[in-house]
Structures are given as C-alpha cells and as structure tokens.
Amino acid sequence: MLSYLQAIVIALVQGVTELFPVSSLGHSVLVPAWIGGSWEDLVTQSAQPTSESSFYLAYIVALHVATALALLWFFRTDWVRIVRGFVRSAPRSLRGRRIDVADPDERLAWLIVIATIPVGVTGLAFEHLFRTTFAKPVAASAFLFVNGLILLAGERTRRAAEPAPQLEAAVLAGARSGVDVTGGRTAADVVEARASDVRISRLPMRDAVGIGALQILALFAGISRSGITMVGGLWRGLSHEDAARFAFLLATPVILAAGVLKVPTLFGHAGDHIHGQVAVGFVITGVTAYFSVRFLVRYFETHTLRPFAIYCLIAGGVSLIHFAAF
Image 1 (cartoon, helix red, strand yellow):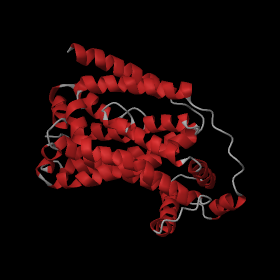
Image 2 (cartoon, one colour; image 1 turned 180 degrees about the horizontal axis):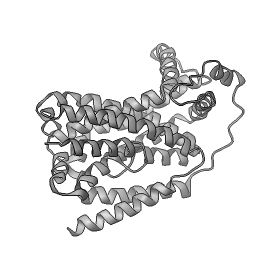
Image 3 (tube, helix red, strand yellow; image 1 turned 135 degrees about the vertical axis):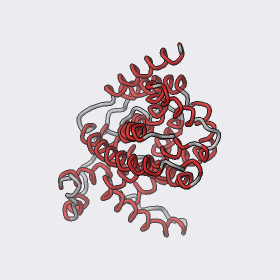
Image 4 (cartoon, one colour; image 1 turned 90 degrees about the horizontal axis):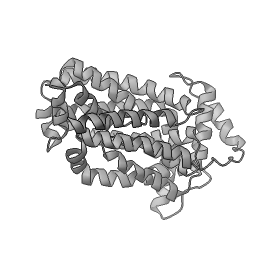
C-alpha cells in the first residue's frame, strides 16, 4: 500500500526530477531504495511484470500526466501557435506539398511531430523490457553516473551557437501585439519565447530527428530525458536557452502520451485504495513541475548543465558503491 507520506515525497521528487536533467525514473527507483524499510517495496513494484499489477506504476502514471499538464500550461502560448501551424500545414502535407519553410510555427510543429516518432515507437515496443530489466537500484545508479558524463560531454563538445540573423520585424511585432502576461510571464518573456521558437525552427529536419531519437536513452532509469535532448541541442548548435525550450517542447507529448495510455490502470486493480494518494500527488507534482520549468527556463538563459552533471556523478557514484556492496 502507498502511504500518504510516500505519495507526497515521490510527488515532490517527480515534479522536480522530470524536468531537471537528473532523471525522474532513476530517482523514483533510488529514493525509495535509499530510505529503505517499507519504501523498498516501491522499488519491487516498479519492476512488476505488468503495469496493471503495480500500484506504484499506476501512481507514477498519474504524476506523469500532472507533469505534462504543467508543461502544457507553462508553454500554452507556444502550443497554441504550434497547433495552429500544424493545422494550417496538414492539408498541404496530405496533398504532398511542402510545409511553408518561412513559417516558423508550421516548421516547428513538424519538427516536434517527426522528432517524437522514434521514441514513441521504441517506447511502445520495449517499455516493458526496459522497466523490468533496468529499473533496479544498481542499474539506475550506474546510468545516473553515465548521465552525468553525458551532460559534461555535452558542455565540452557543444557547437558554438551561430549568430541568428535578425528576426523578421513582422514576427516580433505579431508577438508583441498578442502577448499573454498571465502566469508570471511578462510581455518580454513571451516575445523572447517567440524569438526562441523561430531560432529552433531553423534546425534541419535530420537534426531534430536525431535530437528526438536521443529520448530513447531516457527509457533507461537514470538517463534524463530533458538532459539528453538538451545535450543533443547543444551539439547541433542551439544555445542553452533554446536547447532547454526544445527539450521541454519535445518532452510534453511524450510524457502526456505515456501517461494517458496507462491511465486506465488507475481504475483497475492497481489503483485500488490509492485514489486519495493519487489526488494529493497529482496536485503536488503539477505545482512543483510548473515552478521547476519556470525556474529552468530562466536558469538556462545564463547557466550551463555542469552543476547537474556534478550532482549526477556524485549521486550516481555513491549510490552505485552503496547498492553494489549491499
């Protein structure tokens, strides 16, 4: 049974680690394992043969949906433009015509669609294998350490961001005329977000697919989805700010789809007797995830991945020594 204390702690951990580049899946394994006692039952639950038989996985599903909704709400202005761009371009694409490469919203929409396909297919095919084989403390510790190495490598080998050409006056004028200053976002924030989306939309399609495919590595407990896609963005010449935004936009449909597909488990045997815990955890994760992404978007305007890399190396290394020995 999942206690309310466990539900609150795991919800807080999920709300932070899903978006911080430190792996939520790894922490959902390692935090209970470190606490020990009855908490270790949660680790055992995470490796159940089927998600329908695990109350812990059913709970994590609800937290994923909460995280995705927080991302959707924070980037709501962006997603409205992206969806409109997709709707405008879809009829032309069905007729075999090219999307409007001069329209950043249309291009960004298709970059996200195409980049999401690799991890979507792989997740559906191999999620069970990854979860039952690698969602264990020793493996999660090792992969968390590897995640730290990947983040460091991303900083050391990143391609310098190329100076972007002057953004079209009409694009920025359009952004200023329809700014949304609710939710703690100023007019300047929204205009900069628009400018960032324009820069991201200039990525070649093959680069977007490569960055999106890196999310497959996040199926290993300990490898961060946001971290690995940020590294991919840095390697392809995005700034830290743009790489982070693209990582969060890419993660939203994946996290939401993974949660929604598994939501029926909450109403089956696995969800029995934890509906109250789910409600509490859902709210806590949603609020925590919202403030996490709000912090990170600002953080990566001027900072790098190195502090997170150091954390992963220390936490992963110490955990690996501990769990490998005991």
